[in-house]
Length: 177
Image (cartoon, rainbow, N blue to C red):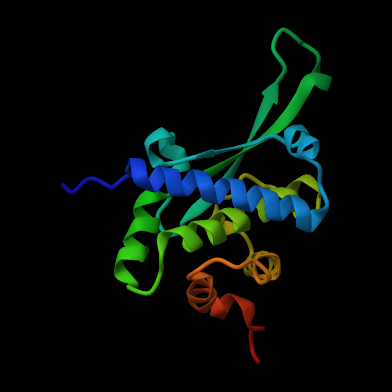
């Protein structure tokens, strides 16, 4: 049995850089302070750190919501939502390998920006989180998030990003037109 490939050290550096850039541009787009991100907590994990239920077939990433509680505070008012962005290393690396014109860095930037837009929409109650994996999110909501992702990234100058836009072009078109 072939084992799924995880990001190597060099690829993890690219993930880290894509996280920094996507956080900054999503913050700027939604005019959110870094404190807002801390209030609406999230974490990004790669495949080697995922629990079995966080691994999915198909999507390149998914958002999983957990309930957290401040340490040593038993009151329900101390509960908070923690969103986990679960990157699916194998799916990402396989697609980059299969599509010769996709580069890892802009592809990661798009994926991470997309997932952060989901988190913003959940935290601002623009979309309800129902413990569904990415494959179960409505097509309409996915289309909205792809359009927002494209709008956010369009002014960003990153080599190879236009190829990523081409990869996702079907998500940007209106169905039935």
